[in-house]
Amino acid sequence: MNNETEFQGDAEQELIRVLEYLLAEDVPITARAVARLHPTLKAASSITRNTARSALLAKFQARQAEFRRWRSRSTKLSSSDSAATLAAKDSQISDLEANVQLLTASHVAMLRAVGELGGFAKWAQFYESYAMIRNKLSTLGESRF
Picture 1 (tube, helix red, strand yellow):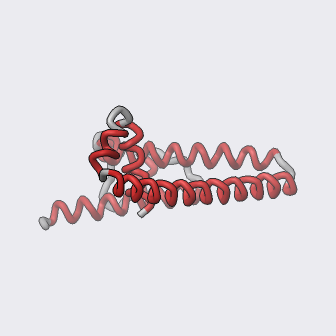
Picture 2 (spheres, helix red, strand yellow):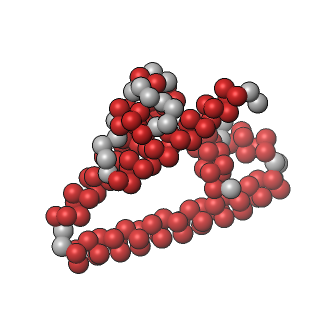
Picture 3 (cartoon, one colour):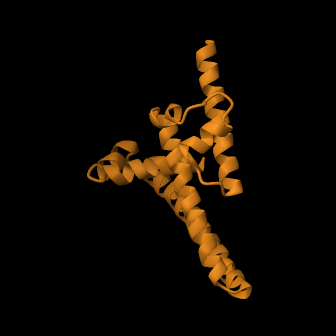
């Protein structure tokens, strides 16, 4: 591995660290703010002209906007309302996680049954017109395991 590649990887890791710091401290996330804190990227254009860095910056800006929206909502609610909302969200998350586990188990059972009936060729034939669903299932399987 050459030094430039190692440096680029280190710079990207440092970029993520700086973005996480800005997000945690609720400092407005801008290319200039990142450049001020980053040890090697000293110009905002070093971030905005690089597509990967620019995309990462945009991702963190969107997260910060979402956090700020949630914070503004919670300040308008009483603490008991906030606690009730949080409890409802936790319950909803638990239900969704249980549903994902159930769907995963049912898909494993379905794949075993399909294997007994004719294997992958029959399964692929069934999903032939559902390429988008097949891609989504593939992505979901990669993220779960």
